Image (tube, helix red, strand yellow):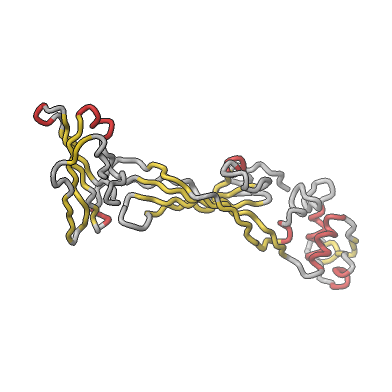
Length: 278
């Protein structure tokens, strides 16, 4: 059934097939009640009955004072994408796939374990006791005996070991140093990755957001109840591509957000999440 059968009558031999080396499509002609034509005029980019998109439409009003208008539209698409019809029709959302959530394994520096970052159980950067000073002293100690005993010699102004030996007793520093003595300098964390795929139609591709920017947690969590809570987010991908098939005016947008325990910087801002810094 023609798309306009409920509005008017297709003219005789209305669907003309056109195919050659430069493109293919059909031309349709309809006789439509003048009172309904304006409200139902086809949009460029709209899917038509041959599975293609409307490339152009011409409206002839009140032919011979008959109370009918004539609509002629073409679904011809060029095989050469550079010569496709340019219009001002904006993109329209057409649907989306379910939000996908996966947890991805990452290796990060041991200092980035949630227990060692500011506010963690073994906060290495606490200003009350400054555990990091003990970690740095121990890491720079060259004598294996002192290192094995979790001690270090303070350096003088020339950078040489002095006679002052510090025995590390700070709990946060010891928690880190014990792991370092066991050979660990990285740790494995499992962080969420949220993917949203949306589909649009129209001659203009949908707009995208900047990649690498911090995104407020409420924005990501609003994508669905199964999106994990308690993370801070960076938008890592926002790509738009034309979909495969005969219709060149359909688009697929893929957005990806990566969650972190804390976001201390994004592509252009230091501490966008207003976390506690050392």
